[in-house]
Length: 357
Image (cartoon, rainbow, N blue to C red; front, top):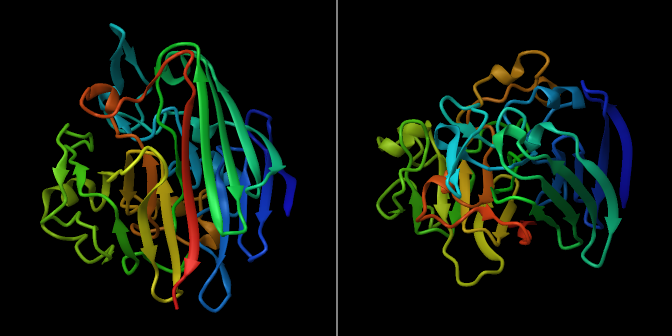
């Protein structure tokens, strides 16, 4: 069942609409066309009791000043680009810098801060909402007019599917993802340090002191970033390891062990108290695991109080951002993120929810 309603007006005068998707098993997804943000995701626990498992806000107005990208579509470029610069076809481009010296998650007004066109649909996979946006040539410093289409589909298999598609009229870097913060115990239930994480990744891309990849691809074996076996997120998060100190925890791109170009299971998260399990599959070569290190309580300052006034502290949630690697335009050895005219960008990520007794 799909429901939609008008929820508010942006500072620029655009109408914000909300879309609610519900399947036959009691999974309910709510999203808005501002930033394509997922505002709520209710999933049953092992006893059949549903709870919202994503971080968010009570009103749409709070999303207008959301500096933590809660629930939003990220683009044009997910992750950081060093010094807000890259060179493409002999031309140096300067981007809007919004993360110290770097451009991050699309810039000052990336895809998380724009009003998307949205429409509900039903198809053979399930029901959902399709979001479309035209990013004009030069927006935030990026070349080319980019037509972007992001589809959220909820299935009766308790899958939330994200499909990304884009075309451009000039060569441009492109790296799209979804920035939902999960807490499988329930929003406001405390930290996620007891969640058990498994990552299908034998390597990661180390970062420097401003969180930019160094270009190295390092094995996780023997480091606190080894999640190749189920491990509590908090088990090693405070270890004396330079990569953890640089990021204040986990904020690293992991290199997916790929057997094909299709969907690959990249992550599994289990929350013992509720029994909820999240499995993430993707066509992308990387996944950014982020332990919400920079949620420092400031999000509770009006008008950005968390849902029901809850103060989001570090490790209140986690993100699994399926993507290409950060700063790829400046690292020729990384998988290319350049979209050319005449090409169509396509990517799919599936989040599947189940329970363990």
